[in-house]
Image 1 (tube, rainbow, N blue to C red):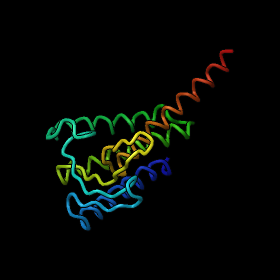
Image 2: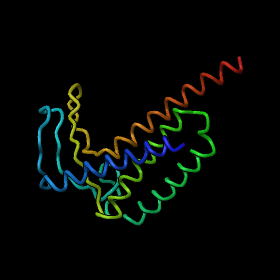
Image 3: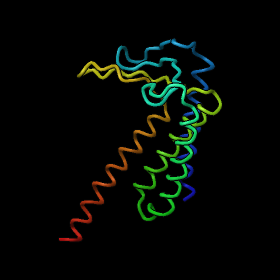
Image 4: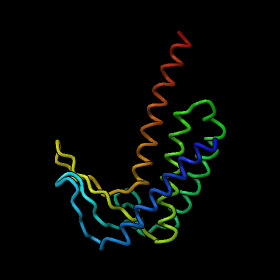
Length: 158
């Protein structure tokens, strides 16, 4: 159990460290190409949720995040026992939720800095951070867990 929570703490620390480095070393709006034009660091601030939705509604984010964090911890202790994949996915969600919550609490905005252009469809993906990536990985792992679990249940029934 401690290893799983350690994963969440590691993600939070990585998220906060990268955001601190961006704030300390880049001007707002500054862009540093890594693999032009597909990947760059771009110092950006988001006062809303994903893609800037609900900008300025910090009280809503505080309430929702606290409920989500409590739900993740509850679900981890009640439902994830015996499932490494589900436990890991929940810790990715926990780390991501807390990482962005810290920003909202201390900065009143979220620091975003990863700028990606998806080449095949030429889509400039919304700027994100380590916490956002952790949330995305967590959701993807939960989907994989559900698919695997469904296949196991079908085999048991058959």
